[in-house]
Image (cartoon, rainbow, N blue to C red; front, side, top):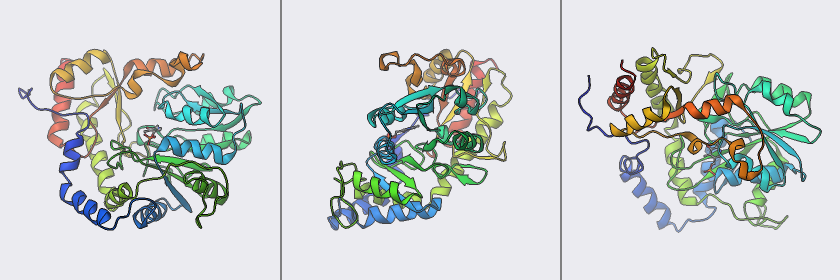
Length: 374
Ligand SMILES: *Cc1c(COP(=O)(O)O)cnc(C)c1O
């Protein structure tokens, strides 16, 4: 029984993330600033190349953040006003916002209660004559059942664009998240599995036409030769951020391995509790390779548990502040989605990142067990 109620396990320790690699970050900073290399320089292009090699894709276009990336994709695929895009309600408001600003209509649908991902069964009932696309969200670093989603898309002639913001390195049947649809976006927000020191993101595609469009749209309409080809915006990844990211990408597998090891600790210590339903353990399903962007479980008496953990120095988070997309009535949504609504009363995310030690994770488990009287 733990008496060390003094241990602090923050949900995400931004200062420690910096301190752990301070020397390396400072030398990158010196190097990049010493070269005066700020916008669209060598580091950005090299980082794009390395992500493309990692994922085995033709084009990686870095952008200011994943929200912009999704927006540019929808512009590039030519969403028409009123085109409907089916997406899971368990996602960040960024996913439907990108559709909205591109002129489309986001249509949130329910999640599979077993894995909290877009439910393939929920897609077909939501298809209308206006449906143009499906936007699966690879939430928590897991990849949706893409075989079924791609089959539905093919049958109904729909575009698939993945919101892979949380899932760099995640796979379904050996294929990387972000490589199933015509294009996808990844986020490098600091708390993402591959995070930079501010905002960042990229668009990934094997489609030359989409790549060309995104290339121009992100940089004032200019192509690789600097010639203006169309109206454009400014949403570029800072070269300095690209340098920080490229440094971390070199040991990215270690980051994934560490997160999966932490998930194993949570599984081993909490798997017997009937009051919580844990996410699938690493390797539990042969089809899925998860990178554990988040460790999101379902808990009885969730709000009380959250408070108890807080009192014991443990930071947790309720994803998207506890509101599913379709619950934002002020944005015009009217759907009722039972599985999503139930999940949003029970979902809680435990600390999951490389600053969390095994001792930290065991302490979290001790406190969760104590809360349930185990
Ligand atoms: C983080 C996130 C985004 C937004 O990414 P930004 O880089 O912060 O714009 C979009 N969708 C999902 C699912 C996310 O988790």
